[in-house]
Image 1: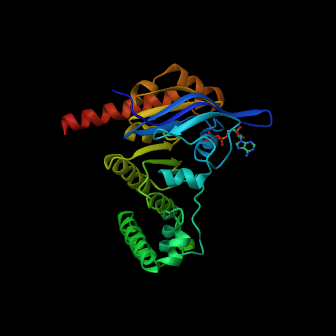
Image 2: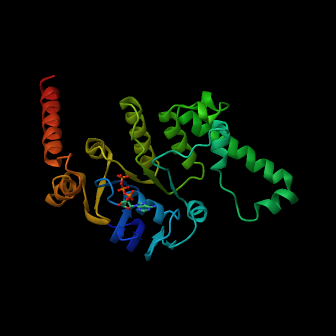
Image 3: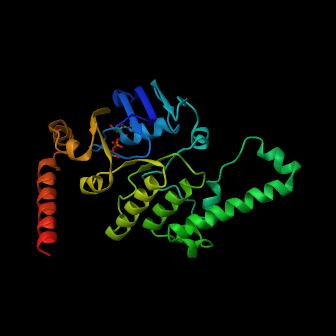
Length: 280
Ligand SMILES: Nc1ncnc2c1ncn2[C@@H]1O[C@H](COP(=O)(O)OP(=O)(O)OP(=O)(O)O)[C@@H](O)[C@H]1O
């Protein structure tokens, strides 16, 4: 496969006191793929997301998005370029309506305030287009009927959907999702997985953090494994999830999760499924 990375990071470092939360030598995310970022608690996944998307500062390193050096740019500028992210704990604004939350995600062009003052008709046109886009996305994420409700009235799962929908307001190239499936019921997790696949199928790139390796395996094209701030290994899910270094990464800092057991269980489940298909 010819490499066409949408995101390239080199020697990215972020420390807190004595802890090197992130110490990534090299990371690429290939365009048009779903890439899962996995690793034990405290591996540095969220910190890496924060640094790359401008929500935190790095102590060193460089990274580029779509060929543009975005090192150290503030979050709103990175988002405007087409690299957006969601948060582990959703950042939905409870006192605004669901539709208003979507419009907060709409792109504001440089000089917009001036244009808005000088050419009100243009502004109205943009606003109407934003509302149309917001409603279309809310329908797609099964939130259309909730457009006028306060976001505070949504369930945890619906907030996750709203956050994903809002991230799409600006037609992003790269969507970074921090544990989108954590704490949601299995039906919703399935629906979120379908949304993730749909994003890739419409030409976007997805990088997502997930702990459930079964989900990772079912949806990702590539897997990147972090442990103690560093990228331990990356590659196709089948290869990576059988890599001894991955097992070490999980067993090293995550004693309650035995990756070998998980893999054995998954393989048994798959084999049983195949046998059932063959006989059924
Ligand atoms: N603001 C902060 N101040 C001090 N230490 C921090 C801060 N943010 C993260 N850390 C530390 O950096 C390390 C990496 O944390 P991070 O949250 O990035 O890991 P993670 O892989 O996302 O973990 P999880 O899977 O639990 O979300 C941890 O040791 C954490 O305690």
